[in-house]
Length: 65
Image (cartoon, rainbow, N blue to C red; front, side, top):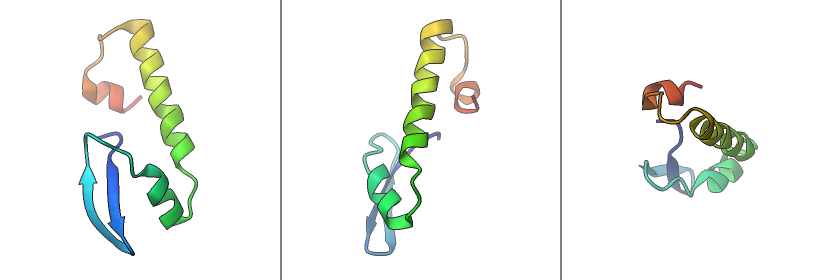
């Protein structure tokens, strides 16, 4: 999956949400790596591709773009 939402408690990964990736910013703070903007930019790119070309790509193809 391209993006999922991790839930953590302290230094433990508790669960991963595949339908609600709301934990991106929490994990960014936990890992001390600023990656959430890159994830959002990549998602915007995928939306732009879908708008431009329609649904001619499978989910697997779209995930690798």
